[in-house]
Image 1 (cartoon, rainbow, N blue to C red):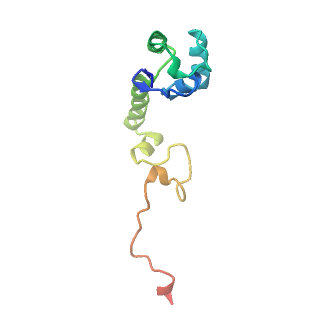
Image 2: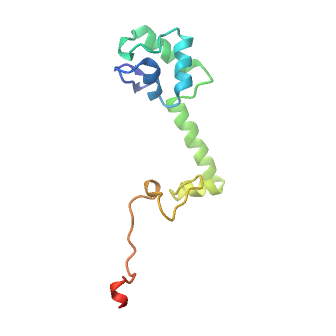
Image 3: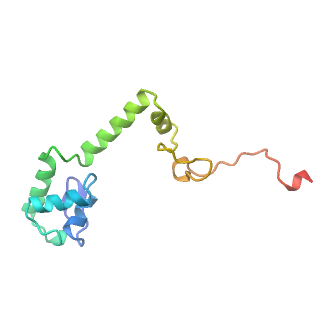
Length: 129
């Protein structure tokens, strides 16, 4: 598996697909990287030479338009920390670990809220008879 910017990209996938495993690179940017370095996007990642891997890494590292991996994660964490610090609604939702973008929480939202916590003390239907 070739390793670019600390990420193992899958060897048996085409280059333009394999580059998407790097956080911050999507379909358009991965094709742009291939075009910029004159690499065939359909070529398998395992066929890359060490020089080509180094060229990809240096392009992603030096180009200011790309924020990938570590710097991108720090940028996102700083944005969330700022929202929490100013105590805006979105920051409070992050703090409470609830959905941030207006989704309903009466039902669903199990991924964000975690497993159900049963509340004891409610009377069942049979006990009312």
